[in-house]
Length: 153
Image (cartoon, rainbow, N blue to C red):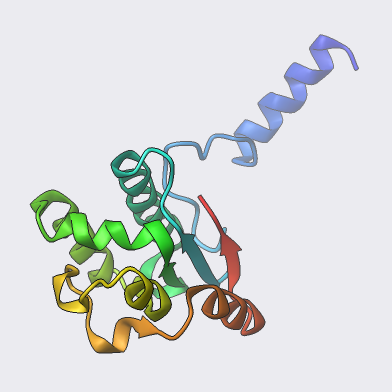
């Protein structure tokens, strides 16, 4: 394909709004279908940096698709539970979790992790009894079986 032809195609696509011009902007109405998504939070090698990136991904996801069009669950187990330990002492992280809950994101915590690591649920920021699931990995499989798409950031 010649350079001229490639440029002409790019101009036509941009004119019609079909190009990659959506980067950094809201998606057009109807661009995304309704979604059910489960995020897998098992911590990361860089701890706090991973958690901030995860929380940013969640916010971006809801904002892109729209609160009314996305159902997000975050399953935390293993080192991922440290997010809620950190939030107990970090007002910025706590506020980000609260904002995401306000956007409809549901956070689930693995009971096996709590038991094995001897973590009292009451020491975790914003975690209620209803947020605790028997097994984090089994919950990931259960949600995928219910049609939730799997994301591990």
